[in-house]
Structures are given as structure tokens and as C-alpha cells.
Amino acid sequence: MPSVRVSLANHTYDVTIERGLLARAGSALRALTPSKKIGIVTDDTVAPHFLAPLKSSLEAAGFAPLSAVVPAGESHKTLATIERILDPFLHARWERSSPIIALGGGVIGDMTGYAAASILRGVPFVQMPTTLLSMVDASVGGKTGVNHAAGKNLIGAFHQPIAVLADVETLKTLPRRDFVSGLAECIKHDVIRDADGFAALEKNIDRALALDLDFLAEFVAHNVSIKARVVEADPFERGERAHLNFGHTFGHGIERAADYRLPHGECVALGMVAAARAATTLGMLNPTERDRIVALIARAGLPIAGLSLSTDEILKAMASDKKVADAKLRFVLPDRIGHVVIRNDVPDSVVREAIESLR
Ligand SMILES: NC(=O)c1ccc[n+]([C@@H]2O[C@H](COP(=O)([O-])OP(=O)(O)OC[C@H]3O[C@@H](n4cnc5c(N)ncnc54)[C@H](O)[C@@H]3O)[C@@H](O)[C@H]2O)c1
Ligand SMILES: [Zn+2]
Image (cartoon, rainbow, N blue to C red; front, side):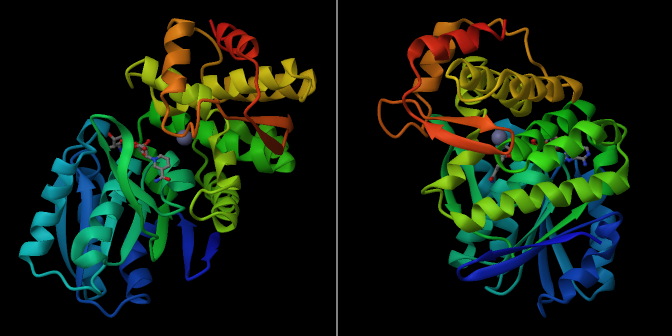
């Protein structure tokens, strides 16, 4: 069974990726805590599929689970929902040592982590990601939080999970568009860190798209290990963790300009295409590798063109991204597949041309 260790200065945890892990979650967690109380936070789309089996598994291992079910969707990733999550646990006189499980996608993971960081100033939390994006990205790294009217993810805390349990079987019920959207972050991982992984995905992308679960277990583990290595090197995002923003400077601009109506992964896909093209224009990336990046994005079923938003609106949205430290836009650009550099000197004309190429 694939498992990836995440080792941070004062905290180490394992990400276990396995078919059927949901049914074995109770015994896996029993090995980590003597607590009788255990919390589950999930949303009303995920709950009908997986809440009952998770509860039975926990009960069989001697836990007394208490659950909070909140409405699904990014629009509910707010402080108001955090209050709804906190309520049942505080009324049940939650204890410092009793863990809370996030069962769901990145929205549930981010909110549960933030709630767990707040209850009694911090209780243990466990990620049980049920989307591809949350398995390979959101559940690893300890970033938690909610959105604010002034912008996405502006409120939050770093709070690392004590364990991540990813059951790839859960991906069977995930809507196709969400699954494909998650593939964007996977392609990103190989472009920034792993040329061999990229070549392997070129060979095996059809197995991923066919939802071959044995392949997906290995594939998720591969992606988690890339994210884990980046997070280990820079847990608080002061340096190289920014490499994970490949495709995201353009991507966030598109996402904002589209008023968040397009899935994140689709915006990142377009962003990676723009970044690869800008890198080639700047003479950093050879055209053959650029074309391989664009081709793999397309084969994954992600968009590489068709953008109808105005270039000026996207540029404006890019400039207002919170990750811009000063007036200069920072781009993560590949100089070859498997390696990126951060550039804050990309000429406006190159940025513009890269966006225009997405029409
Ligand atoms: N903390 C981090 O480092 C990090 C990294 C990347 C993204 N994120 C956050 O993650 C969020 C996006 O996560 P997401 O794409 O998983 O979205 P999501 O959590 O909204 O899930 C997408 C939809 O799929 C449903 N769903 C989840 N699992 C399912 C399953 N197995 N079967 C059927 N339906 C299922 C959900 O109810 C939801 O409607 C964003 O809020 C983003 O900010 C966080
Ligand atoms: Zn992303």
C-alpha cells in the first residue's frame, strides 16, 4: 500500500493511499489516538456516499463519532460555516486530544483544518480527501482557512494533520469535471519537479482517465510525494514553495476575471499553457518541451484555448492577486520539464501575448 511520509521540523505524519481505506479508517486511527471522541466534518454531497461507512468503521474501533454536515461548495467556505462546524463540538465539551476528521474535498479540508486549529486553540485533525485535487494538493501542507468578501483564502492558519487517509475508491463518485480539474495540479507537479514522472504520465494518462484505481493509487502517491518534498523544504511558503504556483499567476487572474465560474483546475491548465508559452518566448524553454506540456494538458481533457475574457480584465485581476508582494508580477516558469525558476522581470508584452494565445 502506498504511503508517503511528510517530515516537518516538529511534526511528522503519513499520507496513506489505498483502495478501500475508508472501511479501515477506524483501525488506522485507533493506532494514532486513545481518544473515544472523534469528530467528522463533511458536506451534504459527500455525506450520503461516505459518512455512514466511515462512522461504522470508527465505531467498530471503539470511537464515538460526532459529525457536522455543512452545505457543499466553495460559496460556503466562510466564517459563518466555521461557526456551524464549531457548534456541535463545543457543545459536546470537546477535549484537546480528540481528533476531527475532514471527509471531503479541499473546501471541507480547508475549513475543518481551520476549525480544528481554533477549537481549544488546536485539536488534532485528520484529512480524508475524496477529490483528486484534495488528495494530491489540498490535504498535504497544512494550509487551512476560509474565504472573505475581499478575496479567497484570506483568513486562515497553518495547521498540519496528524494523518491523511486517501481512499481512491471514493473517486468513483466524483463528477468527471472535478476529476479532470484535479489532473491540472498533477501535471503541474511533474512540470516543476519530475521529468520522468511527466514522461510516465504521457504514457499512462489514459489509465488515469479510465479511473484505473490501482494506477491512481500509485499516481496519487507520486503526486503527494512531490508536494510533500516541496512543503518539507519550505513549510511556511517563504521560498521554493512558490514553485507550486506554476500556472497560477495567469490561472488566478483568469479565475478572478471569470468571477470564479470556471473550475480552478481549468484556469490553472490555461495558466500553465500561457506560462509555458511565455517561457519559450523568453528563450528559456525549448519549443518541443512547450508543445509536450500543452499536449498533455489537452489529452487530460483540460482546456488549452477558448478563453473569451478580455486580456485587460485578466491583467487587472492578476495584479490584484494577494501573492504579488510588490508591484511586480511573479511568474514561475519552466526552463525544462521538471525544473522551474521564479521570474519577476517578464515584459508586459510577453505576458499579454501569452494571454492572447489562449483565445
Ligand atoms: N490547503 C491547500 O493547500 C489547498 C490547495 C489547493 C486547493 N485548496 C482549496 O481546495 C478547494 C477546492 O477543492 P476541491 O476541488 O476538492 O473542491 P470541493 O471540496 O468543493 O469539492 C468539489 C465538489 O465535489 C463534491 N465531492 C467531493 N468528493 C466527492 C466524491 N468523492 N464524490 C462525489 N462528490 C464529491 C463536493 O461536495 C463538491 O461539491 C478550494 O477551496 C481551494 O482553495 C486548498
Ligand atoms: Zn491550484
